[in-house]
Length: 187
Image 1 (cartoon, rainbow, N blue to C red):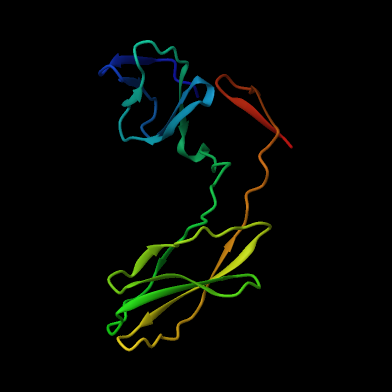
Image 2 (image 1 turned 120 degrees about the vertical axis):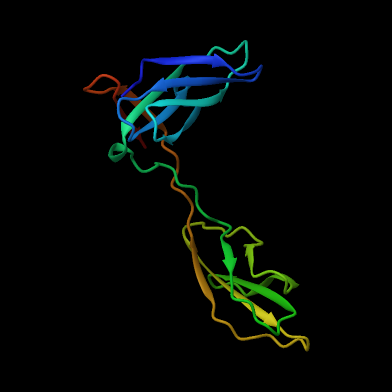
């Protein structure tokens, strides 16, 4: 439901504070600026009196909406970005002086993508894992001892897939109840 009791107070030359009151302390609030140009939320606070800072300079003209919804009405996000650089973690090997990470995708040959001192046991994947049409990636971490011998470790699988094409049209119309909207995605 749209909250119509909103107050704005200046904080400094770049920010202001937005204040409002919710009917239920368990409500989740969303702040939508200029029809979705900027969105802040979900904001879940334990108080009825709520306040957040938003960027708002002296010459700005903004349309600000505050929506308060029961927590059970919060929908899953439409867009979830793909994880194309996962975090790799492994247990330390006491005798390791180096760790090496190898990568293989599909039928391609395996390549070494990392070779570093044994002072870490976690890193972001050093390369971007592509997902054209959906691709299985195989990653393995090897411990290397002082003589250059590599351990034999199990390979981890990681699936990467491109996002579907964005919709060509999004239609928003007034809903059946005040402050609600109907979204229609065209392909």
